[in-house]
Length: 436
Image 1: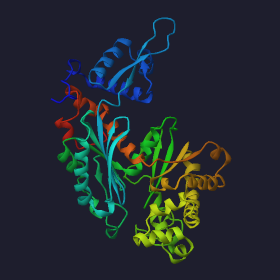
Image 2: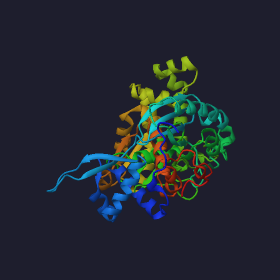
Image 3: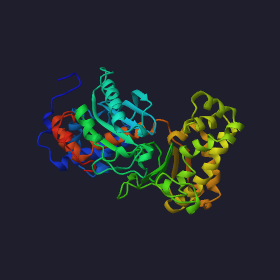
Image 4: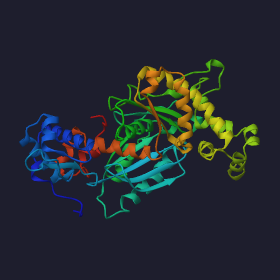
Protein backbone atom coordinates (compact mmCIF):
# COMPACT_ATOMS: atom_id res chain seq x y z
CA UNK A 1 0.00 0.00 0.00
CA UNK A 2 1.49 3.37 -1.10
CA UNK A 3 1.55 6.57 0.90
CA UNK A 4 -1.44 7.84 -1.07
CA UNK A 5 -3.59 4.73 -0.66
CA UNK A 6 -5.94 4.33 2.29
CA UNK A 7 -7.80 1.31 3.61
CA UNK A 8 -11.53 1.23 2.90
CA UNK A 9 -13.27 3.32 5.57
CA UNK A 10 -15.76 1.48 7.71
CA UNK A 11 -18.48 3.93 6.73
CA UNK A 12 -18.44 2.73 3.10
CA UNK A 13 -19.32 -0.89 3.88
CA UNK A 14 -22.78 -1.99 2.86
CA UNK A 15 -23.83 1.39 1.49
CA UNK A 16 -27.01 1.32 -0.61
CA UNK A 17 -27.22 2.72 -4.12
CA UNK A 18 -29.60 5.44 -2.87
CA UNK A 19 -26.93 6.50 -0.39
CA UNK A 20 -24.29 6.55 -3.14
CA UNK A 21 -26.57 8.63 -5.36
CA UNK A 22 -26.84 11.18 -2.56
CA UNK A 23 -23.04 11.18 -2.18
CA UNK A 24 -22.73 11.90 -5.90
CA UNK A 25 -25.21 14.77 -5.57
CA UNK A 26 -23.17 16.30 -2.76
CA UNK A 27 -20.00 15.97 -4.85
CA UNK A 28 -21.72 17.65 -7.78
CA UNK A 29 -22.94 20.55 -5.66
CA UNK A 30 -19.55 21.16 -4.02
CA UNK A 31 -17.86 21.08 -7.44
CA UNK A 32 -20.24 23.84 -8.55
CA UNK A 33 -19.25 26.01 -5.57
CA UNK A 34 -15.45 25.81 -5.16
CA UNK A 35 -15.44 28.07 -2.09
CA UNK A 36 -17.51 25.53 -0.17
CA UNK A 37 -21.01 24.81 1.15
CA UNK A 38 -22.48 24.37 4.63
CA UNK A 39 -24.61 21.50 5.93
CA UNK A 40 -27.63 23.79 5.72
CA UNK A 41 -26.85 24.65 2.08
CA UNK A 42 -26.68 20.98 1.14
CA UNK A 43 -29.73 20.00 3.18
CA UNK A 44 -31.81 22.70 1.51
CA UNK A 45 -30.56 22.11 -2.03
CA UNK A 46 -30.77 18.32 -1.90
CA UNK A 47 -33.82 18.12 0.37
CA UNK A 48 -32.03 15.90 2.86
CA UNK A 49 -32.10 15.99 6.64
CA UNK A 50 -29.07 17.42 8.42
CA UNK A 51 -28.24 14.12 10.09
CA UNK A 52 -28.25 12.41 6.69
CA UNK A 53 -26.03 15.14 5.30
CA UNK A 54 -23.63 14.70 8.23
CA UNK A 55 -23.27 10.97 7.55
CA UNK A 56 -22.60 11.53 3.88
CA UNK A 57 -20.10 14.31 4.58
CA UNK A 58 -18.28 11.92 6.91
CA UNK A 59 -18.05 9.29 4.17
CA UNK A 60 -16.73 11.75 1.60
CA UNK A 61 -14.18 13.32 3.93
CA UNK A 62 -12.88 9.89 4.94
CA UNK A 63 -12.03 9.05 1.33
CA UNK A 64 -10.63 12.55 0.77
CA UNK A 65 -13.11 13.72 -1.88
CA UNK A 66 -14.31 16.54 0.40
CA UNK A 67 -12.24 18.63 2.81
CA UNK A 68 -13.18 21.30 5.38
CA UNK A 69 -13.32 24.80 3.91
CA UNK A 70 -13.36 26.94 7.03
CA UNK A 71 -16.33 28.71 8.49
CA UNK A 72 -19.20 30.39 6.70
CA UNK A 73 -21.01 33.60 7.58
CA UNK A 74 -22.69 33.58 10.99
CA UNK A 75 -26.42 34.26 11.11
CA UNK A 76 -26.37 34.95 14.83
CA UNK A 77 -24.78 31.92 16.41
CA UNK A 78 -21.53 30.12 15.74
CA UNK A 79 -20.33 30.38 12.15
CA UNK A 80 -21.19 27.13 10.30
CA UNK A 81 -18.54 24.70 9.05
CA UNK A 82 -18.12 24.53 5.27
CA UNK A 83 -16.90 21.75 2.97
CA UNK A 84 -15.48 21.88 -0.52
CA UNK A 85 -14.55 19.43 -3.24
CA UNK A 86 -10.90 18.38 -3.06
CA UNK A 87 -9.39 18.42 -6.58
CA UNK A 88 -6.05 17.25 -5.19
CA UNK A 89 -7.28 13.92 -3.79
CA UNK A 90 -6.08 12.24 -7.00
CA UNK A 91 -4.73 12.96 -10.46
CA UNK A 92 -6.01 12.08 -13.93
CA UNK A 93 -4.10 10.95 -17.01
CA UNK A 94 -5.30 12.61 -20.21
CA UNK A 95 -4.68 11.91 -23.88
CA UNK A 96 -5.81 14.50 -26.44
CA UNK A 97 -5.28 13.40 -30.04
CA UNK A 98 -5.56 15.98 -32.80
CA UNK A 99 -5.07 15.53 -36.54
CA UNK A 100 -1.30 15.92 -36.65
CA UNK A 101 -0.22 16.02 -33.00
CA UNK A 102 -1.09 14.52 -29.66
CA UNK A 103 -0.70 15.61 -26.06
CA UNK A 104 -0.61 13.49 -22.93
CA UNK A 105 -0.97 15.19 -19.56
CA UNK A 106 -1.09 14.58 -15.84
CA UNK A 107 -3.86 16.73 -14.34
CA UNK A 108 -5.67 17.31 -11.07
CA UNK A 109 -9.31 16.30 -10.73
CA UNK A 110 -10.05 20.02 -11.00
CA UNK A 111 -8.58 20.24 -14.51
CA UNK A 112 -5.21 21.86 -13.79
CA UNK A 113 -2.36 20.61 -15.97
CA UNK A 114 0.56 19.42 -13.82
CA UNK A 115 2.84 17.95 -16.48
CA UNK A 116 2.47 17.34 -20.21
CA UNK A 117 4.15 15.82 -23.26
CA UNK A 118 3.34 16.76 -26.88
CA UNK A 119 4.54 14.96 -30.01
CA UNK A 120 3.94 15.20 -33.76
CA UNK A 121 1.69 12.20 -34.34
CA UNK A 122 -2.05 12.32 -34.64
CA UNK A 123 -5.18 10.98 -36.28
CA UNK A 124 -3.59 11.00 -39.73
CA UNK A 125 -0.76 8.73 -38.56
CA UNK A 126 -3.08 5.89 -37.56
CA UNK A 127 -4.03 4.35 -34.21
CA UNK A 128 -1.12 1.92 -33.77
CA UNK A 129 1.47 4.69 -34.14
CA UNK A 130 -0.35 7.09 -31.85
CA UNK A 131 -1.12 4.50 -29.19
CA UNK A 132 2.45 3.23 -28.95
CA UNK A 133 3.73 6.74 -28.24
CA UNK A 134 0.76 7.55 -26.00
CA UNK A 135 1.37 4.54 -23.76
CA UNK A 136 5.01 5.54 -23.36
CA UNK A 137 4.20 9.14 -22.46
CA UNK A 138 1.31 8.25 -20.16
CA UNK A 139 3.48 5.79 -18.21
CA UNK A 140 6.20 8.42 -17.81
CA UNK A 141 3.68 11.02 -16.65
CA UNK A 142 2.13 8.56 -14.24
CA UNK A 143 5.37 8.29 -12.28
CA UNK A 144 6.88 11.74 -12.86
CA UNK A 145 5.42 13.33 -9.73
CA UNK A 146 5.77 10.98 -6.74
CA UNK A 147 4.88 13.93 -4.49
CA UNK A 148 1.31 13.86 -5.82
CA UNK A 149 -1.45 11.27 -5.44
CA UNK A 150 -1.50 8.71 -8.24
CA UNK A 151 -3.99 8.83 -11.12
CA UNK A 152 -7.46 7.44 -10.63
CA UNK A 153 -8.54 7.23 -14.26
CA UNK A 154 -7.81 8.20 -17.89
CA UNK A 155 -9.67 10.60 -20.21
CA UNK A 156 -9.22 10.45 -24.00
CA UNK A 157 -10.24 12.98 -26.63
CA UNK A 158 -10.29 12.05 -30.35
CA UNK A 159 -11.20 14.25 -33.36
CA UNK A 160 -13.41 11.50 -34.78
CA UNK A 161 -16.96 10.25 -34.07
CA UNK A 162 -17.23 8.15 -30.90
CA UNK A 163 -20.20 6.08 -29.78
CA UNK A 164 -20.38 7.30 -26.20
CA UNK A 165 -22.31 4.25 -25.04
CA UNK A 166 -19.17 2.14 -25.04
CA UNK A 167 -16.44 4.52 -26.22
CA UNK A 168 -16.06 2.73 -29.55
CA UNK A 169 -14.86 4.60 -32.62
CA UNK A 170 -17.49 4.69 -35.34
CA UNK A 171 -16.91 5.11 -39.09
CA UNK A 172 -15.76 8.65 -39.90
CA UNK A 173 -17.03 10.60 -42.86
CA UNK A 174 -13.54 10.61 -44.34
CA UNK A 175 -12.34 8.09 -46.89
CA UNK A 176 -9.35 5.78 -46.55
CA UNK A 177 -7.22 8.19 -48.51
CA UNK A 178 -7.27 10.57 -45.57
CA UNK A 179 -5.44 8.02 -43.43
CA UNK A 180 -7.86 7.84 -40.51
CA UNK A 181 -10.20 4.99 -41.52
CA UNK A 182 -8.01 2.53 -39.57
CA UNK A 183 -9.38 4.13 -36.40
CA UNK A 184 -12.86 2.70 -37.01
CA UNK A 185 -13.47 0.03 -34.41
CA UNK A 186 -9.97 0.36 -32.95
CA UNK A 187 -10.20 -0.78 -29.29
CA UNK A 188 -8.41 2.19 -27.75
CA UNK A 189 -10.30 1.86 -24.43
CA UNK A 190 -9.38 -1.76 -23.84
CA UNK A 191 -5.80 -1.28 -25.04
CA UNK A 192 -5.17 1.60 -22.65
CA UNK A 193 -7.01 -0.14 -19.82
CA UNK A 194 -4.80 -3.21 -20.20
CA UNK A 195 -1.63 -1.14 -20.49
CA UNK A 196 -2.31 1.20 -17.55
CA UNK A 197 -4.59 -0.82 -15.28
CA UNK A 198 -6.96 2.16 -15.01
CA UNK A 199 -10.48 2.87 -16.23
CA UNK A 200 -10.54 4.75 -19.55
CA UNK A 201 -13.22 7.10 -20.88
CA UNK A 202 -13.30 8.23 -24.53
CA UNK A 203 -15.27 10.88 -26.42
CA UNK A 204 -15.24 12.95 -29.59
CA UNK A 205 -13.04 16.03 -29.23
CA UNK A 206 -15.91 18.42 -29.97
CA UNK A 207 -17.81 17.02 -27.00
CA UNK A 208 -14.86 17.34 -24.64
CA UNK A 209 -14.32 20.91 -25.83
CA UNK A 210 -17.98 21.72 -25.16
CA UNK A 211 -17.73 20.08 -21.74
CA UNK A 212 -14.69 22.22 -20.89
CA UNK A 213 -16.56 25.36 -21.91
CA UNK A 214 -19.62 24.42 -19.85
CA UNK A 215 -17.50 24.16 -16.69
CA UNK A 216 -16.15 27.69 -16.91
CA UNK A 217 -17.43 29.89 -14.10
CA UNK A 218 -20.24 32.01 -15.51
CA UNK A 219 -20.86 29.74 -18.51
CA UNK A 220 -24.46 29.74 -19.79
CA UNK A 221 -26.56 26.59 -19.66
CA UNK A 222 -26.75 26.47 -23.46
CA UNK A 223 -23.73 26.96 -25.70
CA UNK A 224 -22.07 25.93 -28.95
CA UNK A 225 -18.36 25.16 -29.31
CA UNK A 226 -16.97 25.45 -32.83
CA UNK A 227 -13.73 23.52 -33.33
CA UNK A 228 -11.82 24.86 -36.33
CA UNK A 229 -8.60 22.93 -36.85
CA UNK A 230 -7.67 20.85 -39.89
CA UNK A 231 -11.35 19.89 -39.90
CA UNK A 232 -14.51 21.58 -38.67
CA UNK A 233 -16.84 20.36 -35.95
CA UNK A 234 -19.28 21.55 -33.28
CA UNK A 235 -19.98 20.53 -29.71
CA UNK A 236 -23.38 21.30 -28.16
CA UNK A 237 -24.32 21.91 -24.54
CA UNK A 238 -28.02 22.02 -23.76
CA UNK A 239 -29.30 22.67 -20.23
CA UNK A 240 -25.77 22.12 -18.89
CA UNK A 241 -25.51 18.68 -20.55
CA UNK A 242 -23.41 17.72 -23.56
CA UNK A 243 -25.76 16.78 -26.39
CA UNK A 244 -24.44 13.79 -28.34
CA UNK A 245 -27.46 12.80 -30.42
CA UNK A 246 -28.41 9.23 -31.34
CA UNK A 247 -25.75 8.34 -33.90
CA UNK A 248 -22.51 9.96 -32.73
CA UNK A 249 -23.02 12.55 -35.45
CA UNK A 250 -24.40 15.58 -33.60
CA UNK A 251 -22.63 18.81 -34.50
CA UNK A 252 -21.48 17.66 -37.96
CA UNK A 253 -21.85 21.13 -39.42
CA UNK A 254 -18.81 20.45 -41.63
CA UNK A 255 -21.05 18.60 -44.07
CA UNK A 256 -23.82 21.12 -44.48
CA UNK A 257 -23.84 21.81 -48.22
CA UNK A 258 -23.60 25.49 -49.04
CA UNK A 259 -22.28 25.48 -52.62
CA UNK A 260 -24.51 22.93 -54.27
CA UNK A 261 -23.34 20.20 -56.65
CA UNK A 262 -20.86 22.53 -58.32
CA UNK A 263 -18.67 23.17 -55.30
CA UNK A 264 -15.38 21.51 -54.36
CA UNK A 265 -15.38 17.81 -53.51
CA UNK A 266 -15.46 17.20 -49.76
CA UNK A 267 -13.70 14.39 -47.94
CA UNK A 268 -17.14 12.86 -47.36
CA UNK A 269 -17.42 12.36 -51.14
CA UNK A 270 -20.03 15.05 -51.79
CA UNK A 271 -19.45 18.52 -53.17
CA UNK A 272 -19.87 21.97 -51.69
CA UNK A 273 -19.80 21.11 -47.98
CA UNK A 274 -19.05 23.88 -45.51
CA UNK A 275 -15.72 22.25 -44.61
CA UNK A 276 -14.46 22.75 -48.17
CA UNK A 277 -14.58 26.49 -47.42
CA UNK A 278 -14.23 26.68 -43.64
CA UNK A 279 -11.51 24.40 -42.27
CA UNK A 280 -7.80 24.39 -41.68
CA UNK A 281 -7.45 22.10 -44.69
CA UNK A 282 -9.23 24.56 -46.97
CA UNK A 283 -7.11 27.43 -45.64
CA UNK A 284 -3.92 25.43 -46.17
CA UNK A 285 -4.85 24.94 -49.80
CA UNK A 286 -5.57 28.63 -50.33
CA UNK A 287 -2.41 29.72 -48.51
CA UNK A 288 -0.30 27.40 -50.68
CA UNK A 289 -1.42 28.88 -54.01
CA UNK A 290 1.04 30.83 -56.12
CA UNK A 291 -1.02 34.00 -55.69
CA UNK A 292 -0.96 33.80 -51.88
CA UNK A 293 2.76 33.05 -51.81
CA UNK A 294 3.52 35.99 -54.11
CA UNK A 295 1.55 38.34 -51.87
CA UNK A 296 2.80 37.17 -48.47
CA UNK A 297 6.47 37.24 -47.41
CA UNK A 298 5.40 35.38 -44.26
CA UNK A 299 3.90 32.45 -46.19
CA UNK A 300 6.89 32.34 -48.56
CA UNK A 301 9.21 32.05 -45.58
CA UNK A 302 7.16 29.21 -44.10
CA UNK A 303 7.10 27.40 -47.43
CA UNK A 304 10.86 27.80 -47.92
CA UNK A 305 11.56 26.35 -44.46
CA UNK A 306 9.28 23.30 -44.58
CA UNK A 307 7.99 23.08 -48.15
CA UNK A 308 4.47 22.85 -46.74
CA UNK A 309 1.98 25.18 -45.08
CA UNK A 310 -0.24 23.89 -42.27
CA UNK A 311 -3.37 25.43 -40.80
CA UNK A 312 -1.50 26.49 -37.68
CA UNK A 313 0.88 28.51 -39.87
CA UNK A 314 -2.05 30.43 -41.33
CA UNK A 315 -3.46 31.09 -37.87
CA UNK A 316 -0.06 32.26 -36.60
CA UNK A 317 0.08 34.59 -39.59
CA UNK A 318 -3.25 36.09 -38.52
CA UNK A 319 -1.89 36.70 -35.02
CA UNK A 320 1.21 38.35 -36.52
CA UNK A 321 -0.88 40.62 -38.74
CA UNK A 322 -0.10 39.06 -42.13
CA UNK A 323 -2.69 40.55 -44.48
CA UNK A 324 -2.97 37.50 -46.75
CA UNK A 325 -3.56 35.15 -43.81
CA UNK A 326 -6.11 37.59 -42.44
CA UNK A 327 -7.90 37.73 -45.77
CA UNK A 328 -8.04 33.92 -45.97
CA UNK A 329 -9.39 33.61 -42.44
CA UNK A 330 -11.82 36.52 -42.87
CA UNK A 331 -13.43 34.92 -45.92
CA UNK A 332 -13.75 31.60 -44.09
CA UNK A 333 -15.09 33.26 -40.93
CA UNK A 334 -17.74 35.10 -42.94
CA UNK A 335 -19.01 31.83 -44.44
CA UNK A 336 -18.96 30.23 -40.99
CA UNK A 337 -20.99 33.13 -39.60
CA UNK A 338 -23.70 32.45 -42.20
CA UNK A 339 -24.26 28.97 -40.79
CA UNK A 340 -23.81 30.10 -37.18
CA UNK A 341 -26.50 32.72 -37.67
CA UNK A 342 -28.99 29.97 -38.54
CA UNK A 343 -27.89 27.86 -35.57
CA UNK A 344 -27.97 30.79 -33.16
CA UNK A 345 -31.42 31.83 -34.32
CA UNK A 346 -32.74 28.27 -34.01
CA UNK A 347 -31.00 27.17 -30.81
CA UNK A 348 -30.55 30.57 -29.13
CA UNK A 349 -27.39 29.73 -27.15
CA UNK A 350 -25.91 32.08 -24.62
CA UNK A 351 -22.41 31.63 -25.96
CA UNK A 352 -20.52 30.52 -29.07
CA UNK A 353 -16.88 29.53 -28.52
CA UNK A 354 -14.36 29.40 -31.36
CA UNK A 355 -11.61 26.96 -30.52
CA UNK A 356 -9.24 24.30 -31.79
CA UNK A 357 -6.19 25.45 -33.77
CA UNK A 358 -8.02 28.69 -34.63
CA UNK A 359 -7.38 29.83 -31.04
CA UNK A 360 -3.82 30.59 -32.18
CA UNK A 361 -5.18 33.42 -34.33
CA UNK A 362 -6.31 35.36 -31.29
CA UNK A 363 -9.17 37.80 -30.96
CA UNK A 364 -9.18 38.85 -34.62
CA UNK A 365 -11.39 35.89 -35.59
CA UNK A 366 -13.87 36.60 -32.80
CA UNK A 367 -14.25 40.17 -34.04
CA UNK A 368 -14.88 39.08 -37.63
CA UNK A 369 -17.45 36.43 -36.67
CA UNK A 370 -19.21 38.77 -34.23
CA UNK A 371 -19.58 41.51 -36.84
CA UNK A 372 -20.72 39.11 -39.53
CA UNK A 373 -23.26 37.38 -37.31
CA UNK A 374 -24.70 40.63 -35.97
CA UNK A 375 -25.78 41.46 -39.52
CA UNK A 376 -27.57 38.14 -39.92
CA UNK A 377 -29.53 37.66 -36.69
CA UNK A 378 -32.24 39.58 -34.88
CA UNK A 379 -31.02 42.30 -32.50
CA UNK A 380 -32.50 40.42 -29.53
CA UNK A 381 -30.42 37.34 -30.45
CA UNK A 382 -27.25 39.35 -30.96
CA UNK A 383 -27.71 41.26 -27.71
CA UNK A 384 -27.77 38.10 -25.59
CA UNK A 385 -25.12 36.15 -27.46
CA UNK A 386 -21.46 36.12 -26.41
CA UNK A 387 -18.81 35.02 -28.87
CA UNK A 388 -15.41 34.25 -27.42
CA UNK A 389 -12.21 32.41 -28.28
CA UNK A 390 -11.47 29.06 -26.69
CA UNK A 391 -8.28 28.15 -24.87
CA UNK A 392 -5.39 26.12 -26.23
CA UNK A 393 -5.83 23.55 -23.42
CA UNK A 394 -9.59 23.11 -23.80
CA UNK A 395 -9.28 19.57 -25.19
CA UNK A 396 -7.15 18.54 -22.19
CA UNK A 397 -9.48 20.20 -19.70
CA UNK A 398 -12.49 18.61 -21.37
CA UNK A 399 -11.01 15.10 -21.43
CA UNK A 400 -10.07 15.46 -17.77
CA UNK A 401 -13.58 16.66 -16.94
CA UNK A 402 -15.04 13.71 -18.84
CA UNK A 403 -13.00 11.18 -16.84
CA UNK A 404 -13.67 12.95 -13.54
CA UNK A 405 -17.38 13.22 -14.22
CA UNK A 406 -17.60 9.53 -15.11
CA UNK A 407 -15.59 8.30 -12.13
CA UNK A 408 -17.84 10.30 -9.79
CA UNK A 409 -21.04 9.18 -11.51
CA UNK A 410 -23.22 7.31 -8.98
CA UNK A 411 -23.17 4.03 -10.94
CA UNK A 412 -19.37 4.07 -11.14
CA UNK A 413 -18.93 5.46 -7.63
CA UNK A 414 -21.03 2.57 -6.31
CA UNK A 415 -18.55 0.06 -7.73
CA UNK A 416 -15.41 1.59 -6.19
CA UNK A 417 -16.57 3.28 -3.00
CA UNK A 418 -16.10 0.15 -0.82
CA UNK A 419 -12.44 0.15 -1.93
CA UNK A 420 -11.97 3.90 -1.23
CA UNK A 421 -10.24 4.21 -4.62
CA UNK A 422 -11.16 3.32 -8.22
CA UNK A 423 -7.63 2.09 -8.94
CA UNK A 424 -7.47 -1.64 -9.56
CA UNK A 425 -11.20 -2.25 -9.12
CA UNK A 426 -11.92 -5.16 -11.45
CA UNK A 427 -15.51 -4.12 -12.13
CA UNK A 428 -14.25 -0.82 -13.58
CA UNK A 429 -11.50 -2.39 -15.65
CA UNK A 430 -14.04 -4.70 -17.30
CA UNK A 431 -16.81 -2.09 -17.50
CA UNK A 432 -17.89 -1.83 -21.14
CA UNK A 433 -20.48 0.94 -20.86
CA UNK A 434 -19.55 4.60 -20.50
CA UNK A 435 -23.03 6.08 -20.22
CA UNK A 436 -24.18 4.31 -17.04
